[in-house]
Image (tube, rainbow, N blue to C red; front, side, top):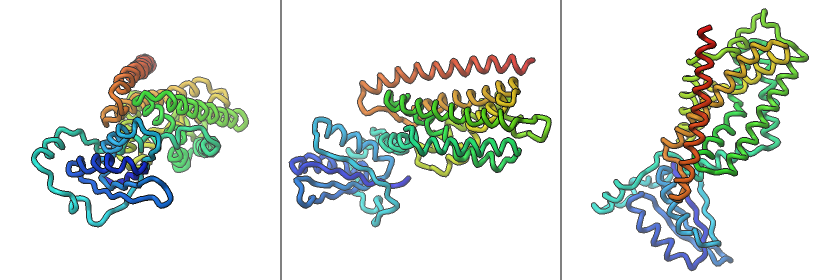
Length: 343
């Protein structure tokens, strides 16, 4: 796992309390820290180097400490390496410390705050997001009409609709209404914009399904293997995200495609192929449902939860309701799909 530096800027009068807090838990969590004075300011800077799996424990402890204070700032930086290595500079813990360490729940993932910051960057509606939707929709239309797999994969890798879905799943897990609203707004805007572009392309360019258009036709039908693929790919994507492995997300973007079936739906509808448009829309919404359902469950399994216990209970109850809604939609979709395949 990678390393992190936690930088704490606080008033000088808090020096002893912060130092004591960090020193007490240092043997168990294996981090090192030092403190320096900020020139011209009545403040100090603490810097802590640790394994990323310990960062949430330390950040939670610091957030509890600073709950009733106004003048402080905590910043988290990624670190490539440190010399000497943490294991070499770690002191041997006592038996009591070992017992406490065994009782402590270590999260083998990025901290909650890092996950939130990463999601927030891609879940807020912006000009760059709108441009990305426009460009990726055009790429998807060209790839589908030319029956070119490489071009379609290019639209998949851009994956502008994937990030707000991840944000919505994280917001559900944390019970964060503001993040949920921002992610929903971004997702809905992206869907409507992409659909409008592809619908216009279908109206003005048309679609000849009698020509070689296997890539387009393949996105006008859904079966149970598509649902299983969407569930597994969604879970794999969330786990890769929480582990901070962005390279793994490229494979997930390709496996769990959202934009190509939405683009196919717009093209078919614009060209007047209603039944094919309904089939593509079914595949798109099946992927959306499976991604959000597997996303929330995966965040839970990875131990992502709010800081305070009362917020955890509130978020858990809310998440269970959302899971029930997504689950019910998936069951309804599966039943309709079953009768459709039987016919």
